[in-house]
Amino acid sequence: MIIINVCIGSACHIKGSYNVINSLQQLTEEYGLTDRVDTRAAFCLGHCTQAVSVRIGDGEVQSVSGATARDFFAKQVLPLVGPRA
Image 1: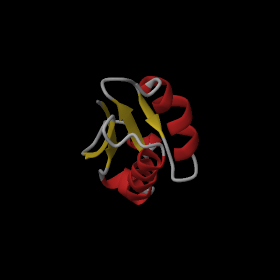
Image 2: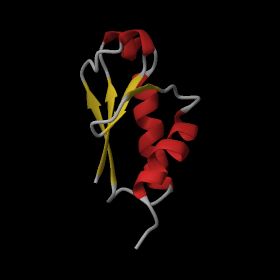
Image 3: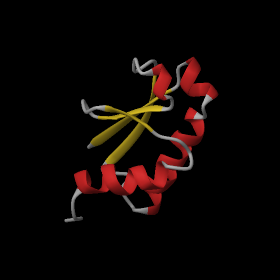
Image 4: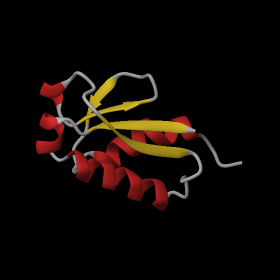
């Protein structure tokens, strides 16, 4: 299971963290990966100036917006999921 943490702290909330969460959840459903990808709200990831902060597992914190969520999912999440069995 791949866990994506999306910050919902003050700075990220103002920058649209809930839009990012919704976009990532919709993409997970669109690709049929609800059994392999879990998007969760998380409190401060410590990168407030880069809001909206997103981290896959224990990886690096990245900045994602509603407009870049699809690209982030394609480039960062799909390669981790690998082919369906």
